[in-house]
Amino acid sequence: MRVATMVRGWIATPAPPDVVYAPMTVASAVASGLTARGSTVDFYAPRGSRVPGVPLYDGSLDPVVTDRAGFDRVIARATRGDYADLVAADRHLARLMARGAAAGRYDVLLFHHLEVAAAIAGDVPQTPVVSVLWDPPGPELTAGADEHPNLFVIAVSDGQRRDAGDLPIIGTVYPGVDCPADLPPRTRRDGGSRLVYLGRLIPEKGPDIAVEVATRTGAQLDLIGPVRSDDRRFFDEKVRPHLSARIRYRGHVPHNRLADYLAGASALLMPIRWQEPFGLVMIEAMAHGVPVIGFGRGAVPEVVAHGVSGYVVNSTDEMCRAVRALDQLSAEGCRRHVRERFSVHQMVDGYQAALAKATALASSRP
Image (cartoon, rainbow, N blue to C red; front, side):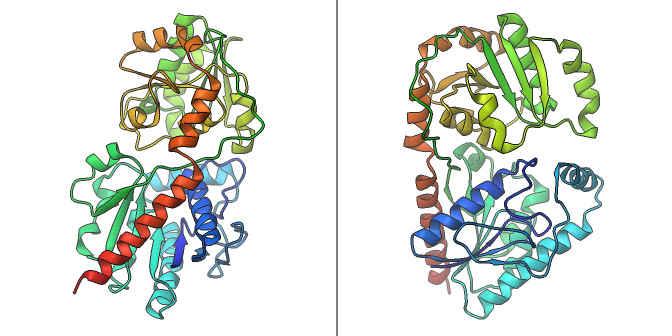
């Protein structure tokens, strides 16, 4: 199979060390995995990008974003509608991919942002165009997706898939991670003494609920994640007043240092108030032997094996009780669950099957 793929035209792959960008992590692993299986994969990304074992095409683009501050500025600009240069960079690489497809170089184009895929699908009507749906399928992302019979979508969870309406979804493929090899199996018997919250500190993700759980259970809590300017008021009103020697805000932690903060943690809390499409932090925590306690919204019930790799709960009271029951779970149970359901090997299997299905569907149409 000959594949061309991209994530964004304005940020290099991998993302800067202080930026956590799940689509990029997955895209790189999928490209390398497909290449190792014999597919020809070309990765389109701006200068400075690198993907192990995969040729890159930069389109003579320099990245707009090179660090966390730049990433935050882009997000702030995007909320104001100031993103014409970002769209231009995405479209530039997408058009290069489309030209390659029109010239017969590619069997399928794989995108990680649906709006980019939908904008280019009409240029290559004979080539299947596949996009991963990372976000909730709102109208701003799905506009035009039903106009192209050669456009197909991969969901990252069945919960997201159920909310996707008439989008042409050809399968659910869970993101995958590999369990670190150097973590010895061990049973947790710390009674929930140190909890971790990972993610943006925004109302939808419930860091204030995590603070309440830590307060009520007497556990320590490390809050890890960015506070953007638009979220400062929420943080100052709902989180900052409760910070102490026991409840600590650690700021944004580079992805390559997450293992340090997960080491010895009793649980990761996912007190989400919204329909989380997946939540890569959950499988990363479980891969490090850390169970997850999450509200049963979005993909949480699909990701967490209740009573094995964590607990799926429906209220703050239940979350507090689950913290007190963490001694019933084991680190090895968490890691085994990831190996069985969310490995990189399984993820690449899923992408390989989805791309083959899209190719077959496209070729069968008149």
